[in-house]
Image 1 (cartoon, rainbow, N blue to C red):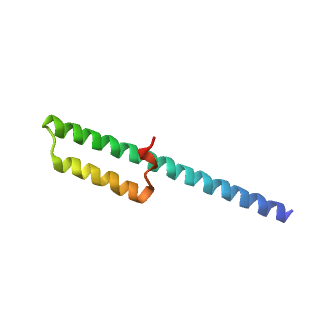
Image 2 (cartoon, rainbow, N blue to C red):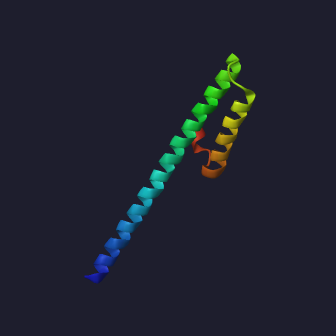
Image 3 (cartoon, rainbow, N blue to C red):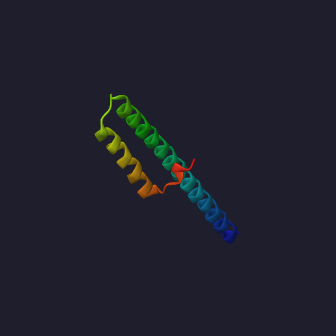
Length: 77
């Protein structure tokens, strides 16, 4: 009986770990999308004359930093 409970506990832990990993991926994807939106807004404002190149560069740096940390999959969706 103890072996069965140990296996069930291990399976539950694996499932929990997989769920956490998926949640982290979704959160990274959402953050990447938000950063891309900010970059687009900064670029648009710069082109319209109401924004600055510094704001655009700052937004681009944030996107690049996120891509370096979490990968660039958010750029493809």
